[in-house]
Amino acid sequence: MDFAFNELSESNIRSPDDLDAFYNQLVKLMRIANLKEFPSVVFTDDFSSKDFNGLGNAYKLMSSSKLERDEYEHFLSIIVNAPFSSSIEIIDDQYLYDSSEVKGFQYSCINSIRSVSIPGSNWDKYNYLVDKLSLDDTSDELITSQINIEHLGSLSNTAGTWLQKYLPRSEFSNAQEFLEIFPSKYPNVLISDEARNSLRGFNMGKLNQLDRAMGIFQIYCDNYWKNSFRRHVITKLGVHIKDESEQTMNRYGDQRLFLNENGEKEIIPLHFNISEDFRGYIKPAEENKIFLAYLGPHLSTVKYK
Image 1 (cartoon, rainbow, N blue to C red):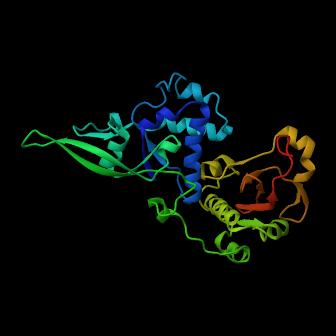
Image 2 (cartoon, helix red, strand yellow; image 1 turned 180 degrees about the horizontal axis):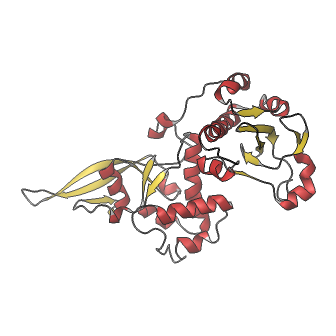
Image 3 (cartoon, rainbow, N blue to C red; image 1 turned 90 degrees about the vertical axis):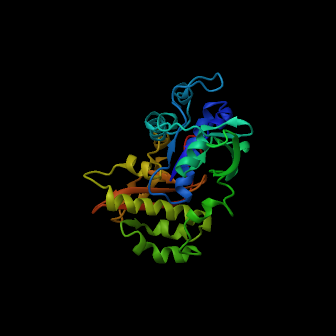
């Protein structure tokens, strides 16, 4: 899914958290729309080098980012490598929003793609009307017409928006139905009895998040598994997996002692988030499979007790 960046939203950048929020918005879009590739963004100029409201450029702001290491590196690569529209196409027409010229909306219109902004209450809608100013070839008069721009608005309210048609329809209506389709839908994901029993108590919100994660695990097993298990590839596909910290393992490592795919006890620290308070713990298994050892409430860490 392609987007043009709305440069007017740069006024929302007041701290490194605002850049993190922009990246996390795209991560969430990828998750809820079940996208197979990370959304592509075309910026209006060299986004990485400009100064944001006296705070410094993107590199300086990102030095204080709270993103995880691999997420930080991924976001940085997007900023560094993304094309910018002013170097791609220049036209005579002007595009104005609230009397301000906006190159991002212009690029959206010309190339029939949506726009995206730094998140904020002033840019949470899914459609914006933009004034297009054109010079009439015969009369040399300035003609104004209104253009509708589809925009990535607040992901907390997608009902009735253009995004709704991209959201996957659920193949299940409860945990039992999810478990029934699990073996055929995710043949390369093995699930423990403990995880299976815990899953039976999941509501639809958690089931949908788990469904998306299992889909990405299956895609990884089918297409990306090489000679070793590469968790950074899964993260790029849209599910952030990581180990517990050394401090957490020293203090709470016994909570990560699960039965593995062979029925033997094993410490399994590799995990992913299902929601803010629920996690799954996984490990690579033989024959390009992933073993799901635990599903359930967030276990104790040095930061979460």
